[in-house]
Image (tube, rainbow, N blue to C red; front, side, top):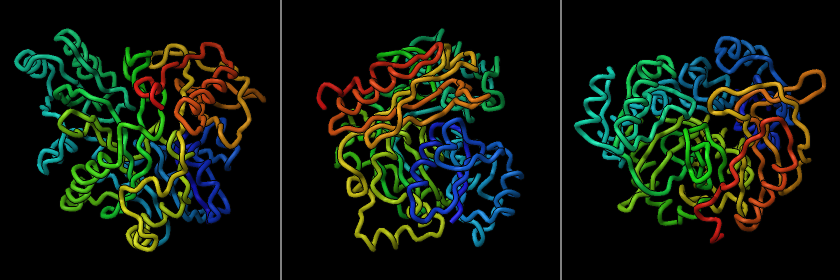
Length: 433
């Protein structure tokens, strides 16, 4: 079958890499791809948000399965333009993608269905938002209500930081129309974890839990980024906690989406905080996480295309019954050990940074090491940086320390001017694993 992956980041390289391993796939394209995706498939020169261009290409080239990586084309309705009888699409409808594209929608859904999350308020003018900060007190979390590429969240320890976050979102318009409304919520405490499930709207399969490192600085300091590294599985998510999150969060969320008339089909990402009294939802994403995907997919021991087709055809439950797979038994579909992903970023990220720096020293892929490209491109035979997050260096090992050592050894061999990386990925648990 012919498969087209939409997107240009490290997540899409990882998806294409895993999809290429399927016996079902006779042709694989990535639109628009990056400097590394050509190693696993054909580059298709169409931008991810070119809905009409993608529609025409899919129809004219008889694509069988469309896999949508980024949130923007999902929020803009790319899934909705295809007849389910002619093209299989892995990714939710625009209505279902509101669970990420509209934080008010997501929080109201959780509040209405008793899905555990932080208390919150939404404001459409900065003066009211700042007044609430003074009435409520700090610490607080301030978020742009719309899509902000993972950078629209500000953890504020004092009123001045909260005011600055509100101004950044609503007055300075750093995130454009995504800042028309601001969401302010209580600041939760505990370890964060990412739980991703593949679902057809009713049945779901949990993938290995992972932990991202959002802040730019070591020790989780500085501004939020799209993610500076991840590892999987996350020990904080033991079997009981995974089962509890399924029962208290995933299942009621899927039920709520069905009852709202927006059934959710695709990859549902739950960003969670494990608090003293149980898990709480920090955010939902309507697509695979980045860099969590780079850490998780190398652990997956089953055919990803089989799972995607089961979702697209509504037969995930049939598949699960056939192999007697429980929703939360992720270990049955995974290899043992750990996978770690270290992000190499451009100097200055997540602020302004320079592009066009030559990249050298990328090690060859082997069974326990792979480098996924993100912000890279080829120009006149040279591989150059073209984004803030440049590469994701992935190591696999029997222990977390082993996997991290392989990732960092390979990361040290890669060279480009201004290379930046965090050297404390997994710092919360590395001493015990």
